[in-house]
Amino acid sequence: MAANIRPSGVFDTNYAQDISINRTLWDKFSSYALFGVLLILPIFLPSDWTGFIARIAIFAIAVQGLNILMGYTGQISLGQAAFMAVGAYSGAIFVRELGFSFWLALPSAALFTGFIGLLFGLPSLRVKGFYLAMATLAAQYIIIWTIENPLESLTRGVNPLPLERFPPQFFGTSLNRMGLYYVIIPMAVILFLVARNLIRSRTGRAFISVRDNDLAAELLGINVFRYKLAAFFLCSMFAGIAGVLLAFYERTLITSQYPLFISIELLAMLVIGGAGYPLGPLFGAAFIFIVNQRIVPFILPTISEFLQNTLTFVSPENIQGALQPILFGLILGAFLILEPRGLAYRWEILKISWKIRPYSY
Image (cartoon, rainbow, N blue to C red):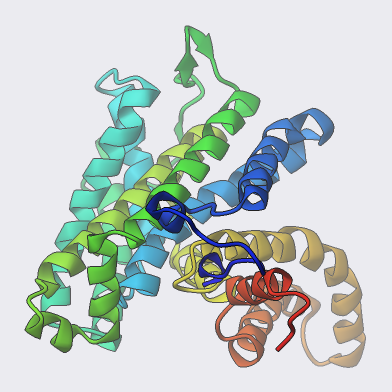
């Protein structure tokens, strides 16, 4: 939206400028500067903050896949965490059992996860809305059950699957968490650029037409089923990449890392960040992580003490266990009421206001 607005007195003079993502010198400078800041942050920040940023980037990748499916194609998925698990376990098995390098296991696991997503995307031909949500919810349970039971000999079932002996190698050197940070951040940037350019392509325009009116799109000659499956494939691929990166960053795997709640949280990240906006997944992932891991732990003791003194008829253990989900639900509900288009929409409005200054009208 803001990309189509020029500052006063700035005009495109050729087609290359018109189709460019960064259309002004300031846009280019700010993009490169932000990327440079992300790369040098580990020098100045403690290791826990570096891990915090890396996890935001990983989950932003998974949410960007969900954005392609929901924000641009209008389909819904409640199984994104399960597809992250597929990517994580398949990548680990490729490395542990087949001897793949990390750099080969990453795209292989992404493609494998994409094909698994195609299987669960097949119901999108017949059902939509609530019924499609139920189909993808089934995927969440079926995939986790399959990992824990029929594939127990490969995945160790409900027990942790360690990866300490298989760190990624770069020019013969094992990458620790700090080294993986410099893999995760560029990977996230590249995938965000891929998603943004995809939406500007013929395929992206077909996605949007399916979202807006699938019947009209079909009458115009768009193969609706094909593009729905393509959206599921891409969504699952992004989740698979995020799963592999998370598995090797954490150095261990366990199915309890990918419950239904994580799928719902990924969906909440998209809603809060802004579905259908390129930066929505990043804003949503950053917001949820900051709230859950920095703000809520800080205010939780005070609120918990107040509620225990007020609600004396409720067990303190029950209050402490329910407080964080309640706060999460309240924040999500507030966003749905006050800012239904998400943080990215407000960011776009802010950028437009800056570009058209001083003409406020």
